[in-house]
Length: 295
Image (cartoon, rainbow, N blue to C red; front, side):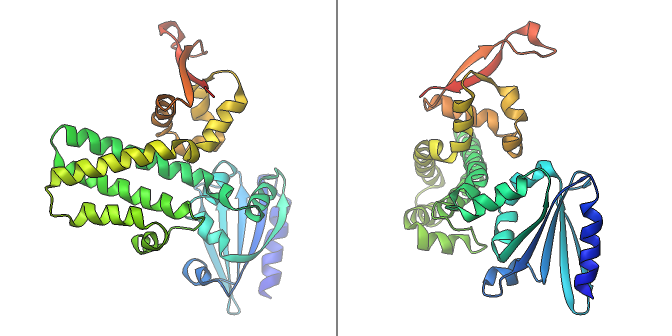
């Protein structure tokens, strides 16, 4: 009976022009993540152009059977499916069946899911790096102004994003017990955080040492973590105006961090920054910053 109800709903959506795709996921009971994320018998992901908020969750129960429905806007699908909400949820299912895929985005996801695995992390990997860089920059500014407690707070947050990156580098998903996980996967990062939080040195000394460690890590990871952005600019050939980068669908979730990332990559010598003429209501005031591959 329950399967019949689900089938009727799916068939109705198949005829709706605003539905871009439908994916049915069946849990793998052998995976512990199922118990944490998905207490259901099946999950339908519906990519809907009319989705009012993204993602939108609903659940139906009938005859002791639970079906979860997740509606998501097409523009949010790529970022959500590789995020730390979507990736663990979808990875915990044993079987994925594409029921409809008008735009091809579900087939693209399935191809990535069946590949090496690291590509699934790339979007979230770059986002974690951006937030790591942002916290480091703010901590450095507060430390320079002598506001040590504020600097301490941002260094602590920087370590949090560094820890998530360390876990993702091992192709694992960060867990709620993050530092226990890091202790097993990257003892160096764990020891640095332990020293930062428990050392008997003065607060200023701990912040100074932590900032040096963060700066070194950010410098060495910039090209790897920002690989999708660098590759896109490289393939573009000509200088890309920053407004075009900000509007690109793949980087939309990073909009507030992109100017900082681009400047960091230019500082490291991976990109060249220049001013170009670009159509805008303010073009008479001068050129627009643009970036090109410097390799």
